[in-house]
Every structure is written in C-alpha cells, then in structure tokens.
Image (cartoon, rainbow, N blue to C red; front, side, top):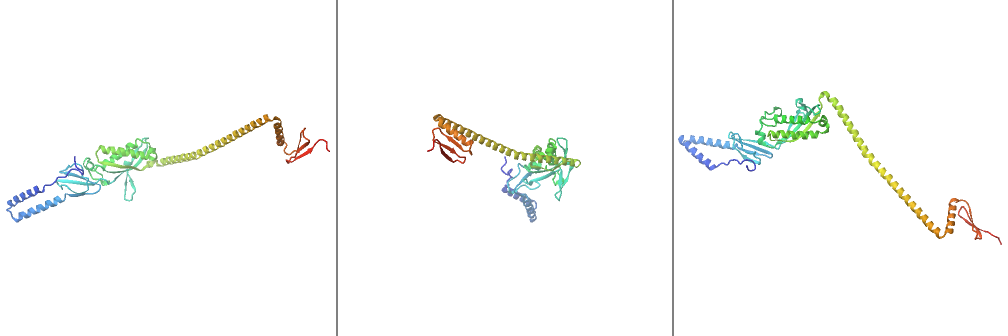
Length: 359
C-alpha cells in the first residue's frame, strides 16, 4: 500500500552523500596532485550536480496528477497531492504532470473549423439503422481522465494529427474507433424514427454505456462524461422524402395534441352538465315527494276532522269547492233553519236577505 498522494519518494541521506563527496574529492585531488585546477574542476562538477538535481523540482496544481517513472518503470500510483514536489530528473527519472479534471471533446462525423461551422466526414457519419435505412449521425463525446497511469502507459495509440492528439494517448484513434463502434451498434438496433425524433436521449445514453464498456476493457483510463447527438439527418439523396415524413408526423402529433386538449376540455364540461342535471332532478324529486307528503298529511287531517264532525266538514268542503269553481258568480246560500238568505258576491261581499213573511 502506498501513502496518500502515491508512492513515497526516496529520501536522500545528506551525511552519506557528503562523506562520499569528500572521499571522491580526496581521491581526485590526490590523483591530480591536489592543485587548484582539481578543486576548480570539482566545483564545476558539484555545481552541475546541484543544477541537475534542481531540475527535479516540479509543482502539482489543482486538478493535476503526476505520473512518475524511474529508469522507465512506472512508480506506483500517480501523485495527486497539490504543491511543490521533487523527483529524479532525466535521464534517471521522468514525470508527466497532466490536468485530469479537464473536460475534453471529440467530434465524430464532422470537424469544427475556425468559424464554428462543421465540415462533414461521411465515412464516420453514415450508418445503417435497425430498419435498414441509411442515416447521417454526427456526435460529440466529452470525456476526462480517471486513471493517469492507464491513460499514459496502457494503450499504444498512433495518435491523430487532425485533433492534435499525441502518439501513445488513447484519446486518439482508440477513442474515435471505439465511439464509432458503439454508435453503430446502438443505431443498428434502433429504428430510424427513434434516432431522428422519438428517442434520441435513449440513443445517447446507450451509446455512452457501450463506449465506456469498450474503453474500460482496453484500460484506457478515460471516463466518458456525456455523449450528444448533434445533427441527425437522412442522406442528401432522400432528404426531401424524409423531411416530408417528418412534417407529416409533426402534423399528426399536433392533431393528436389538439384532440387531447379538446377531450380534456369537453369531458369535464359534460361531466359538470350531467352533475347539474342530476342535482336538478334530485331537487325536483325531493320537492315532489315533500309536496305529495304534505298533500297526504293534509288529506289525513281533513279525514280526521270529517270523522269528528261529518256534516259541518262536508258543508265547508262544499262551500270551498264552490268558491274555487265559481269565483266570479254570486252564490245564494239557503239554510232551512235560517230566517235569512246569505248572498255571496263575486267580489267577496256578503249580503244577508231575510226570508219568510215580512211584518
């Protein structure tokens, strides 16, 4: 196990170095007779050694890692601790300080120029979908470095001059070929509708997973951050037909959305009208029941009064009925026991008229 920040760097025993230096100077002076020239030469050698050792000082900044090599052999894990560090200078040791958190970009199917426009690369972009249609797909891959030692020393890549990728870095031809293989695999399993409009996010996610699997298999040390489809279209020869199909689908989707909006508007209103009609019917039912109940109670009350005083009740009912039937006709009420005749006018006035012999 190595301490945090990578393998512990060797410590120098300055006492032993000083003793060896003194012994060497003594032997050197004895060989050359101990003259001033010998001391001068030794001073130059010492100064050269100090300068050479000073070139081993380096700095690790934020987001940077340092891969260390001793006589060409990789020394443990990369150094990740920030600050001033020292390692054996060339030719004994080598160090590679790389910014690993930087988001890098690779374009597939096109190359951006100085004006920002993309120059197409049909050999990379043209591929066959799962329903045997030819589609032109342009993609951008964003990545960073997750293992510096793997990134620098595990893959022998020829590099790619058009993108400025050095030989031996796996984000050259290795990354481009792996991205193209992953994209062709995913597109070959999807219909052209999914790729053009229906499920572009699913295509991007599956391509990212496939690409990461391939790169991990090669131990490239690359971490894929995002995969984005830029321009997905049909080839020039059949583009007009595909555009017509896309316009028809967009119109279909528009009509479907309009129908759903109409459905969402008309159904609640119809339900509201139905509830209102049911509530009105329920109110009418309750009113009719209450009215019938009242009439039944009134009939039972009249029946009770009738049973208690049949003659008086019969006469009252008769008179009330006559008032309703003949409201504007004068009525004459004659009682055999009475000495007068009661004349009821249509206007509600009552005029008594005596009957029998007059004095």
